[in-house]
Image 1 (cartoon, rainbow, N blue to C red):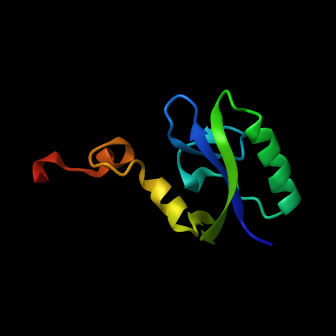
Image 2 (cartoon, helix red, strand yellow; image 1 turned 45 degrees about the vertical axis):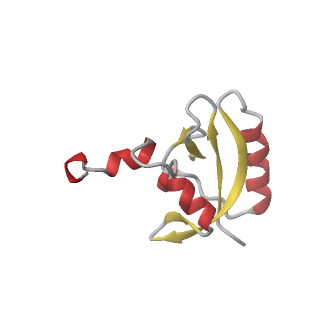
Image 3 (cartoon, helix red, strand yellow; image 1 turned 60 degrees about the vertical axis):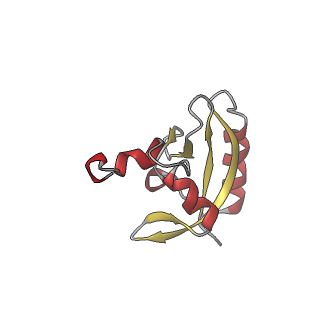
Length: 101
């Protein structure tokens, strides 16, 4: 049995999103619903993928759990957490002090 969450990209903004227990798309992995049952995860993925007017490219990722908080297990997902790879853009800009540039 593995811990999994559903991820996709928001249709309008392109941001990485995760499916929350409420059924809403959220932008923080820590808020994602963790599935421990493969059949339940597959069924939820099927429903999430059909919501292509909200998010596209839905798929399951395996996560670790530390103190109940999901974390990425693969480099690709860790990279997606940080946002776009170009400097001062998207999520990365939130952590930049322009006085240090």
